[in-house]
Image (cartoon, rainbow, N blue to C red; front, side):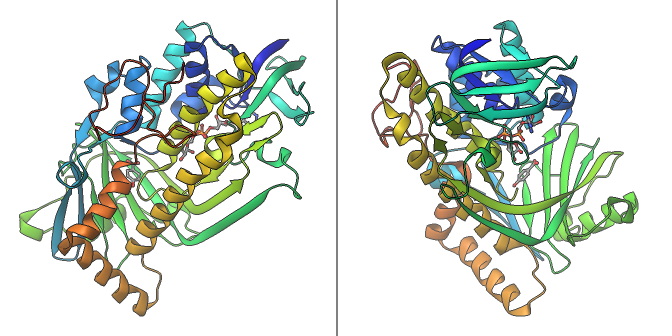
Length: 416
Ligand code: APR
Ligand code: PHB
């Protein structure tokens, strides 16, 4: 089989890339190791930056997001006895949306199925070949075991942190930076109405806690736990007690509503950046090139920002044999490092490290954010997200969308 673009991985990066390419008339095939049902059921983060929402809307993926997503003006940040609201709209003129990655994935699968996208699910032994030539190819075993080969002009690795694409860039060429945090999150999904109108990020001597949500009837919570925690060590009663304590039950009569827990898992936390994100005819996007700890919910937004850059760059490369493909890696890494720093900063500010000196510095930093507009604006600017940029550093705007967020910058149109 021959196709202009072979995409490895059907997560949000791979699916959105195929959607943007199709809108520009560029055909692609997606090769995914898991089943469609597995990919659709994965529970991940749930916050979209304003520019991610604008992009999804502008390419026809905004209908359910508008009906079911919840627009939030900001977040609550708290220390014991004090809950402070940071209003991103007042601070930086941008909001965020609560809309689960699971829902984004459903919208993408629906749109790509309607668009006739070819996707090989349950592919085995996926391998990349000849990526430094003009004729790269991908081999794999299809779900029924038959060997397959896809010849492409370009291969895009959207296969997350465990896929084969990132290691197709040889050691002498790639540089890797990584950091493993000495704690994990216990993630909890519960059938209970949120006990808050916006997310609560809570610093607490027992460890960090986060109250997030998925819908008016479903809440999402996280608790800082030691790295080697077995999820079965925590009874549902212990989880609710720890959440109530850390989230500040009793502050101004606030109380945490409880309900049936439907999912519980332990998530390790790590930062990882690999450079370059292009090697010959191989391009990396999303978790294949970078991982951030979940504090601040940047992972999905970064994957969206990567493919917003990559799709027009690939279209220009394939149609005109020129354009911004050479600039993709540097332009994407610019944002990747900003988000890597922000996620690290939020994580380090809010989690107990066990060192009492660290704890005092964290409290001082949090009080600075509570009381200084400059500090609060810095957090808001990063959390609500920077506008999407083209590789030439102009503001990205999909065709036909008005930029209501900044009023600045030139149009960077994927079909320009
Ligand atoms: N062959 C084919 N596909 C593979 C392989 C392989 N060998 N290994 C992994 N994959 C698939 C995974 O099954 C998954 O569906 O690649 C896909 C990668 O998707 P994600 O992990 O969702 O990564 P990405 O699309 O970059 O999205 C980033 O996901 O992990 C979160 O926090 C992250 O929210 C962010 C978003
Ligand atoms: C989530 O809802 O899963 C979520 C929200 C905010 C975060 C991390 C995760 O910072």
